[in-house]
Image (cartoon, rainbow over all chains, first blue to last red; front, side, top):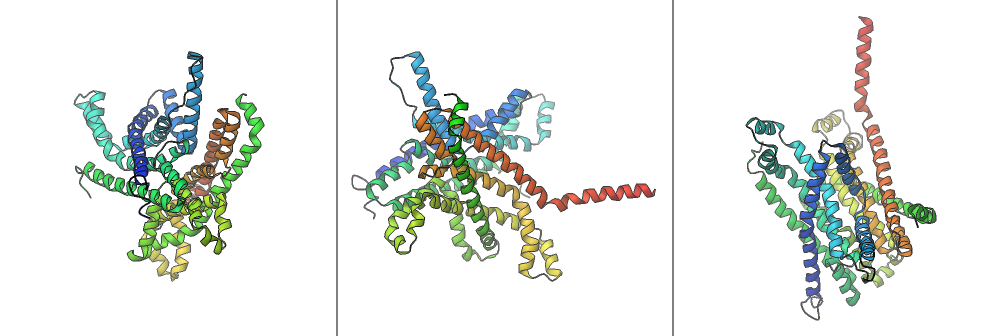
Length: 235
Length: 244
């Protein structure tokens, strides 16, 4: 059995590791995109301007209610169609192009992450001590300074547990991109299964790899939480 | 074709898909709801050694993608085909609907167990002591005192879990179950009309919205005795006023 997992031509170890690399890349590229969208959603939903507020509310509510795989297909097919329509209009003779599955994965997973992160960050903003903002104002800080020096450093502490859960969910959701033919861990497993006819062995291996990544993430997150709370006295 | 025409032409398919999605979600959630109270009790009361397999199960279910779990059951069972045929189980695992249902039920059981565990641990000690003091047996105090309160605590989280399960049920389309997502992909591959995805999104949002309303109604009913005292107080006050 270990021959199947060996490195090189005979085994599938290298193919699966390459898939794993794509999965990890996808998750790491998606994280900043999702966080950015999350911050935008938070600012929108806390804005004083009603249309912006409804936009933020609509985005977080709708995205959280849709299955992730539907979002992925909407982005993959929708943007693909849109790109080709624009291309036809721009250059009628050009051959049709495909939207890269990796980009579709980043956009779709980032949008999902952003919607949930928007709620986490809003909750974190609301649990900040308002007196600190007032005292910042009292000593003459600008809104920008208050945000950067008082709110943002503490936001991290409140948002970290929620964001950590989102990271783990997103890591698992990357498996969905195998459905739109990106060669991630899940899809390389499927290829290996197709050749070796050992579905249980290889899917179990894939599960164990995802599991290991999640457990590792949990450990790192626990450390980060501990560090984020180092200035706080525990009751 | 415009979006409305698509809907008029294909709504019977989407409706079939809707029934399939509801069937998967409701059955999966119900099976998990039957198993999870027992597991939750083990997680609260059993010795750490006895809990170990359960903790491993929950951790595995929470640490792996549902898609991988689904593939492990649906495709993975093929590796044990002769064995399963001997046991007469092959006809079960050959059907993608059964495999999807099994995967969702197993997954939801893990999440519901953890949610219920939190609910049970949230029941105040005093209530259990009071039940003991008036001579209730352990079993009786479980279903008269502990579980009613535990479910009230866990109710909102359980609702979230059912919504997550409903969203996850869209994955069944990958193993050729024709739920809303499966029907949508079928229609899209036929028409290449993007609007069918928007209708699918609307269907999923409607399911979620209706479910949230129903769940909230149920929550109000579960805790109706908590709201009751306010009414009693106001009648007591008005009585006082009429006397004075």
